[in-house]
Amino acid sequence: MKIAIIGVNGRVGSRIAAEALRRGHQVTGVVHSTRTANAPAGVAIVQGDANQPDALAPLLRGHDAVVSAVRFHDLKAAPLLQALKLAEVKRLLVVGGAASLETSPGRILLDSPDFPDAYKSEAVPGKQFLDDLRGEKEVDWTFLSPSAQFEPGERTGKFRIGADQLLADTDGKSHISMEDYAIAMVDELERPRHMRQRFTVGY
Image 1 (spheres, one colour):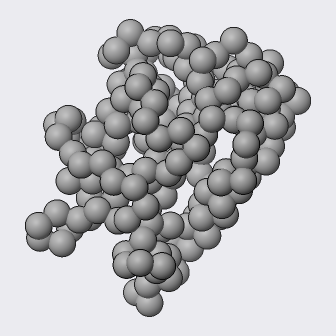
Image 2 (cartoon, helix red, strand yellow; image 1 turned 30 degrees about the vertical axis):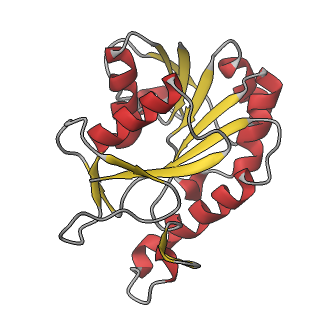
């Protein structure tokens, strides 16, 4: 497959690129500034702004899918979706957040009384991004939420897949490594199982 990854120089985007390259896919990395690009060898780097659909669309055209690994306080769904439509790319996979996952029926992690204020500047627009995607009828989108603790770690290939509920292990810990998250993302790219849905991964 030919995959464009927006934000390929970030911690998550670079790991998704590495996983895709490992499996033989062709990867284009879209970055805001090529001077700060830090992506795995083998990624074709291009400069683009995900908030400028007219300029972004030519960079995406010809790809089988687009992965957005951009922080939500820097991006809204509408211009990105518009860019895909202009580029005639049907598939969008989004690196989501855990805050919009349910901790109990009808209650999400973001609404927990102990949810850190420092994370809300990313969590609130992340939830809005997902809400906006849920109204999209043309692009085949997928929003992959990690578990609550989401850091670089080991690539094990052993994890669980869930839907809208926060996953936790037998000790009550909700966690996933960025490396295993990348496996789940590329699995979804290769074998779509959550079209126009959100899903989550965790141990």
